[in-house]
Length: 112
Image (cartoon, rainbow, N blue to C red):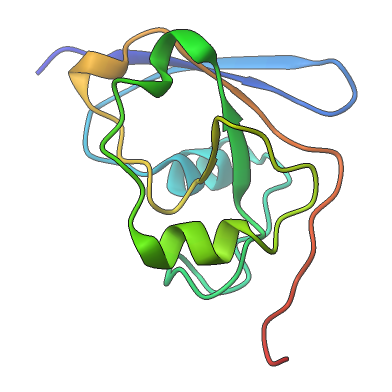
């Protein structure tokens, strides 16, 4: 299986690029890289703390967000037209070169 390149644009302006095997989620990959992405619900789509903004060039290559994901995204700070939850974006070969912006802030609404 060939590796896929993913780049995270961090709030401070730093870029972290990595080559990974397909099949991991953006949240899992961020945690492996030590990127500050909370994932308070541990990938169960019960919060919006893994909110990322997908680059325009790759957004249409992602499967459409579910209604549940859209509802969680409504709670995210800095929402954009290409926002997704990192726990719901699975890296595939079609996403090679993916660029993701990690927002400066997030809101943890778990338990409310």
